[in-house]
Amino acid sequence: MRLAPAALALLVAATGCSVAGAAGGGDGRTTVVVGYQSKTINTVTAGTLLRSLGYLEKRLGDKYAVRWQDYDTGAPITAKMVAGKIDIGSMGDYPLLINASRTQGVPAARTELIATTGYNLRGGLNMVVVPPDSRARTLADLKGAKVSASVGSAGHGTLVQALERAKVSGVEVVNHQPAVGAAQLESGGVQAYAQFVAWPGLVVFQDKGRLVYDGSALDVPTFHGTVARRAYAKEHPEVVDAFLKAQIDATRYLHENPLAAARSVAEDTGLPAEVVYLYNGPGGISTFDVTLKPQLREAHEHDVPYLKRIGTDFPGVDVAAFVNDSYLRKAYGSGYDAARADTANPAKITGTDPVCGGVVSDPETASELWLDGSDTTSPAATPTCLLRQIAAAAGKTVRAAYVPDTVTGTRWFADHAVWLREGDEFRPFTTQDGADAYREEHPEARPITYEDALKESAA
Image 1: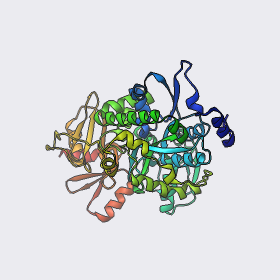
Image 2: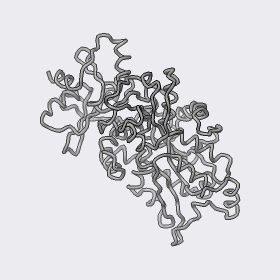
Image 3: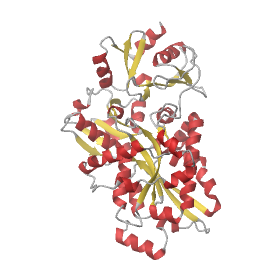
């Protein structure tokens, strides 16, 4: 049962402690309740990966019992935080704003954004997918269509902004949980699917969809973050400190062991490791960094008017009052300001290109090959070099091959990219729309299929 704000405030005032934190494990330990989204793999350093590594439990010690609660979206986490039944949670940028608005009038439930999990400065974590055989090539082609989205989610927010910018009207948004929407796309119940990481990549990887809109084209930062109930944080600062330090540890582990981390998340979530690695690997769509960067706060301010217009009963929120990095500064230490100012992805594709030769150093072109049966991946200096590697590996099965979009840098599956040949170079794009826009400025570039690009790169 969800407590009314006044009743919740009265209960907490009477007991003198938080509702969730007060519930012990029956053995004298204080229970810490953490809400997370296992399949939203941009939150793994505060959820799935953190849980599997056991870093939080190790830092808290025997006085605390951690109870992990898994959800598909941020909405149920917010509902339980309002009711005082979750102490710390993680969710996307739009749900974070809704979380703040739902709790800001309830002192006992009021939340604060205390850290980032991962982000993409251009917006590439959210995408729109259509069926593989759809005639839609751009958002304009979706006029009159039904589009599945989780209302109030980051994916929904990107869809609304993208349609508005493209001046496309007449789109009907159907509210679905991500898994339900994916099934509806496959069955023909909807004509498109707008979702957040990792659902678009999963649908495309399974050959059940084709990317029609890359959120990076919007060029508006999107991110996920860690939120805590303010009253709980004040009462248990040692728990918040332990959580943030454990999240920092998990972030470091992900950077140092990207393939192992992807496999661990895949095993725990049922997602293909290839999809997890698309987002969370070196040069991935997501940049994992706990610091609360000014660009992300500005994006939150930018998102507020959109949330007011998409039917989520969103009254607005004081973003400045919602963001609190004091706990993180203490947990991070003296290097916080320098890290906060740095937006370079610390997880880079490195090594020596085995076919083209030389050290792989340019993150704008660095690509990666994962052959079946291999415990390691192979770096490529450019997408053209990656194609040559695949051609040279004839007879071996490609588990996944990753290339960056020529313009936006969004990491994507090479066999699902749209390819152009320009001179001796082969240039990949996440969408047909992106490739067409490039050709307008580079008329010498010609379309080529992935299969033909492999053959011509070898020659």
